[in-house]
Image 1 (cartoon, rainbow, N blue to C red):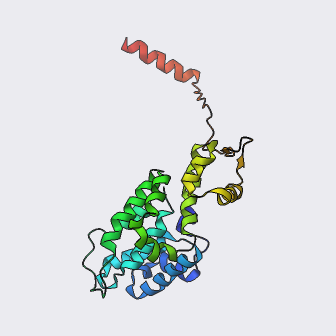
Image 2: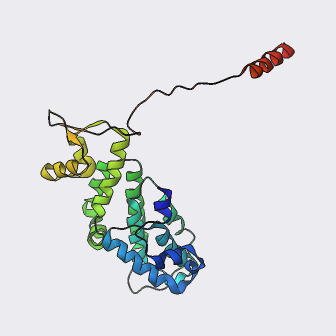
Image 3: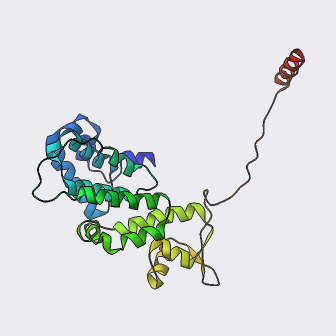
Length: 241
């Protein structure tokens, strides 16, 4: 999994060479990285290290600052929870020098606390609260101007919920799962089928197949002490007494 994070298979050779070498600090390459980000938005792919390279260039070169790029990077990183991608991204926004003058008001100061809040809910596995806030009228600007442009965004958030469900449950009520993934009726049934989960005979519970995370197994610890070691312990105890 670590290798997939550092070198995703979908990363083009040009980006691999750029991200892996000193050229990632060359401000003339920022356009290449930004184009690659837009490719990620359209394709549903994700490359955290390439996106971090953009933020690092913005940090070193205030004149390159583009708030829309930053917002898109942060939104993409939400789906990586509980991995630290989001925190890595926001850490590069701190102590940032003033950027270039913008033709329009900067949307980042108002949206950053909102996105932080969404990340916090995902990290704490408060999925019903996440969907309620995400669907609210207050976040219409985020949906209409940003997440709508990100292919598969909502499905990627559902995958965060799936990872949590697989790790914590062997059985979960259908109603509860619906609040976690924000789906109902036939859409929920199709989602359950896609995960290869099954619904029990009552039709009200979803059964999660066994995996290393949701199985409780007793651990037996055996210690092997050889006779010479035991002799030393007894001798030491005798001396102290």
